[in-house]
Length: 76
Image (cartoon, one colour):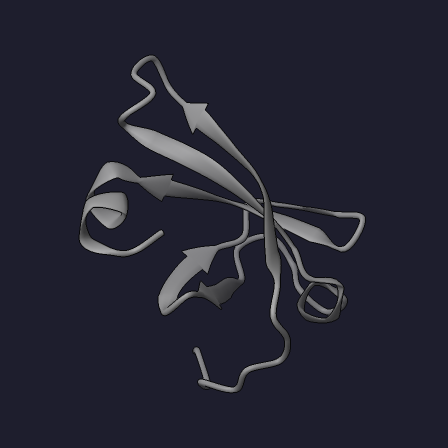
């Protein structure tokens, strides 16, 4: 459950289209060593007010897939 506590300011370091149509979804990679230190795949991390599910972890970064609907309705 998201607690609303801001642990750190991360930096989006990569945005890659996912799927056959680049407009369907993207994979965001965010550098945030503090928040990733105790994260696991499947955890939720809020990014700019949007709760994202961690799909990848490594080197102080996490990856999350963001669907078109989320891109359309948020400022990601």
